Image (cartoon, rainbow, N blue to C red; front, side):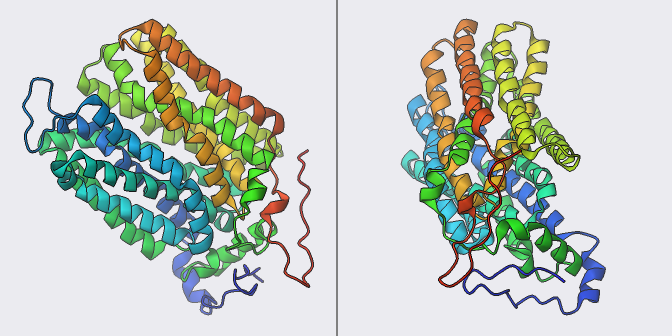
Length: 480
């Protein structure tokens, strides 16, 4: 007997998917579990999102006229500050939209929020060439819209995990979010090839078209919860609903409890520790190509390959880390201990390696440490990032929005700090100071998590009982 999820409006089970013809559905659904389809949609969704986010990072090189080159209709005389504004505006709006994403997802569901956000980003990509030719202000406007829309996607996808993925599979599912690593790794060589073969506008037409096509697939195959899925096998639906019933307690659609989240120490330590991981991550993304060119002396073609390759490898490492985390939990290791171990791997180890990179002068050891550090950063998805669903499976979207508002500020604070330190990009001493700061941030922000993290649903995760209803029994909120 399946355990139906309660409807958000009246506390009853939804009736639009009764799975009357269980035998027929089972024949063609059992071979591909619905949660595997959700994994592939999540993986490909973040891949496409990060292609549309990062395509301009390489295209802007060709969009900008060289110092002594006259401006043309497709080569613009943009100063370094203008280019920085074009690239940086995205992240300001990305941070602003996190809370909006949490609220919107609780109200409208993951399918609507993720799908429309991706479509808005794709349409903006298609419009970028025309906007750039008009004035860079229009381009900044489109990048602002893309940043705001992209910021909605993470809370949206987090919110669906608690309803679809059993606790013993959640770490593995979190590896789907690392589709963004493939997106980053593919974007640089793909866009470079497109520019060489055609021109820079073709980059945005390509990524925008891919985004629109992906949205059509998403709307056809994605559903907010198993009870809404018209093709899920009854056995899979029953297994999922029984596995997640204790955590979600009919909480679908409940209002975000921002005051409780804001006062929650476990939520704060997640935001604080992941701030350190994001600081490291963006040091590699934003300054990796520059360091390889001006310090290590790699030419542009080699630079592009070496800048993208670690992110391709990092998806594989994410799968391994997340599978290892689930294996450890299944074999009796405390979930909280697992989260702390993998959080340490994601920022303490890369934090040490990034300082060693600045200290080392030989190319081969630097490249080895570079690959290891970028790969280890992905362990965070078996650590503190997965911990969000542990403490609030009903409110994972809002909690993720809260945490990302904190930690994504590192995406613009890290480059500001590094730019203030590094005045001569060929100076190894200055790079050592910038990378040393990243090391300190990564390790110091891990300490609160080590001391105060929790891995059980918090009391505010559950729906408050209506008048006359019995209170929902809460789990013990302390970990062994």
